[in-house]
Length: 464
Image (cartoon, rainbow, N blue to C red; front, side, top):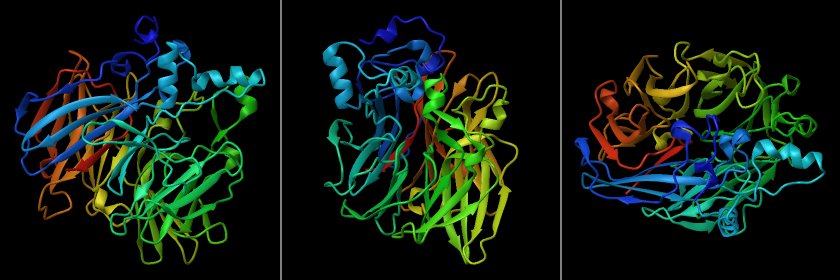
């Protein structure tokens, strides 16, 4: 068991529904309010940090936790729930020792000040992608883990038959029309950015290094039919500040804000950079091409949010849906807010449309006070600008939702939106299924899970 059980702490990353769970369970014949649709079959998955050992509770950062996947397997109108740790080499070492080995992010400065470079643990705790018939769990800075379905067993790290040699982002992009997966890795030492295209055969067909001036936290990317898009923004790594007690990353306005657009199999000689206003984005909704323009939609904030933000209003760190248009012929940039009313993040679309024009975006809506927590989902219509809101109810907290097309769907939003929902009043968790075309209605199904499902990071849907 983890020492976190007995630790006294008010660290919000270890309390409430961020408190870890330790039992790996399988629950069948789950109780359902409503009816699970018979026209969907597959696996709803969410991965997140779930620390087994905590080196320093007061300085624990949510990025530190061991990866745990929570999965609801849906078939024939019934559901089975499973949760499993990512069985990383680091976690297995720590279990064998009976205590922590790898320090947390906020402890790195202690080691660097002593001239030591601490080891890091590839937790696989951030996101998942399904490619070439295989589910991968990832954290940026590591190698993806292969995970079996539906039992969620870790099958080991995977380097695509040795063809991907750089760090692997948590947010690769899969083009459903070509079967290609575009991925990248960023580093704290040169090369600061590496880029690869993995073919539908599961091997990299193109790899290159892309020059950027500083090491930056580049969490996400985007693709279109012909391009891959990289944000070079002001969240930079600064070892001197870290050793002086600062955080792992810092806001460096002098780095500038620019978006790089490179042909899918291009390199440094063919990338084009476009300057944008000072801002940040963690997560991309989608991107596509319209004539001479590349359209790029994401959740834009004024600040990064994970660096030191003392004195910065919390709203400055939260995202809102935004669009940039980059004219590849003239070099012009147009920037506009899609929504100024709701703060949101974790934007998702119909997965088959990644890199191609989409009409609908689904995103998790923030409740800002007393501290930012997701409380509902929004549905944004690119054609009309209409926004629909689904509120999960008083005391409820949500997270990233995914769109699931129904069998034989006839429209882009003909399907369901699926999400884990936690009730902080009674400590219970559910998997809720919404009708995407009746977005504000009550869920069509609420699948009750006897095990608490902690808040995680990113979700995925893998069809059966």
